[in-house]
Image (cartoon, rainbow, N blue to C red; front, side):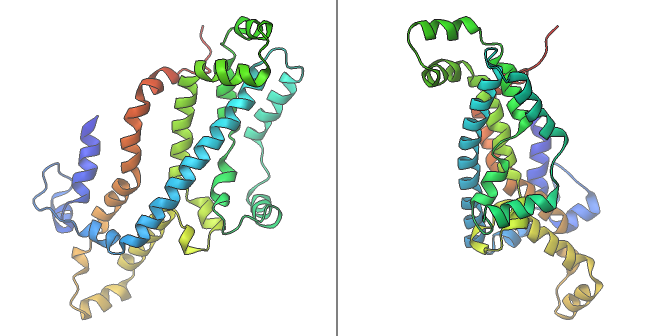
Length: 275
């Protein structure tokens, strides 16, 4: 399991010529940090992008879990009169959507979120798939627990906060991890709605950097210009840079995952139908 991760890290520190001549190796002929030097030559930019991504991921995950768990709890209650109709409404949005143009108009013209950090948070707050998974998990909680709490005088919010949420920790941890990954890896919404360089998240910054790198290395006129400046384009870290991007973007999530692992294993079967 660790070998692929180690290979990615090692290749990101490998010399470009070594990769071209010998391929991918766990022990390269020559180590080089040129790929990281290329990305980290402006540390203020990448640190700011990290900050934006962390803020978006943390705030978005917290709010999304609240919305997902409350809606899933309502749909899991058998005494809710519109349970089937609401469940169908949620499921329907998984099959059909308005498309990209209405989505763009909604965010920019109606909600006025362009060049706002909320443009990166609000569109991903509620996933119908996650709602249905949460509903499936909460449906397994015995209704007798809820009825006994009502007999003792507990109201709906108290039942939800004090009883339902503690019993739903595996589902909350698993879906929280998925939502966190979604926010961390999101870059398309930033591409659509963010023009302010102060709000560019990490993933969009790396996508722009890789596109620039591919553009430079694929244009013959740039190669000719570099030769005239005595710059060897064959030594340009094109391959190792791609793996460096993977390390820079996925590294923090690899550190987060072990803390959720004990919940994640149990939560893999949440909402599943067992025969």
